Length: 127
Image 1 (cartoon, rainbow, N blue to C red):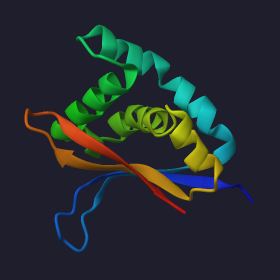
Image 2 (cartoon, helix red, strand yellow):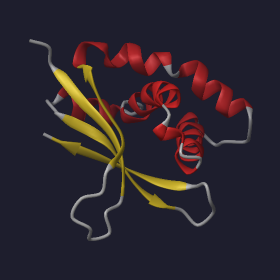
Image 3 (cartoon, rainbow, N blue to C red):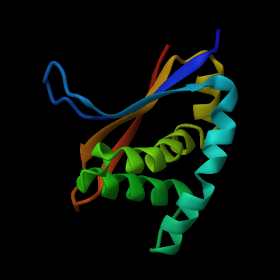
């Protein structure tokens, strides 16, 4: 049986009982590094389109733009967003350690930023 990690993007509930996920998918733990690496051309293209302080900032910007434009509802856009989510969820030693420590669900809870389409990404780990 595969060891699957669930990845997600979700808007902050602000007290609501059930806010739907913007994106959710499962990935075999053994394929996380490969999926994250497959996001490299996407992140590079986003980075080339503007001035970003880091790859993570470019990735967050790209995901924010897709969400604000309702791209997360389009299966083709979801297909592009998924590796970027994996990239962001595994781009630091701390995040990788959380996944290696047996996390079952990892992802981001998003809150609106001060300037649209900016969203603030908060990393969440569920064991």
